[in-house]
Image (cartoon, rainbow, N blue to C red; front, side, top):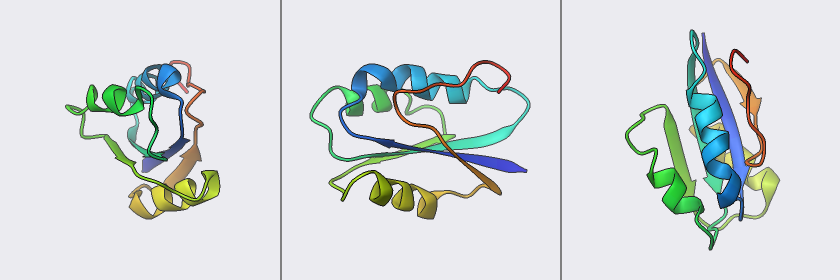
Length: 96
């Protein structure tokens, strides 16, 4: 069973590293994280690029029509059996 964690973002670069790290550090579960960024002007893209070596993370930074649009786009890119929603300023604890 695979989990897809969908993360909408706009201007949350200062939180992005903690958010992505908290998903990718989960153990014992097949997962992916799909981040849809609304073309942020802050450090969001640089942070996402720093995780480019991990194939479990996929992301796009382009204009959107808000959070719902970003979530719908992320959902269409997801490949998991189950879907979770994690905002960019949130994070999972170990073992979540």
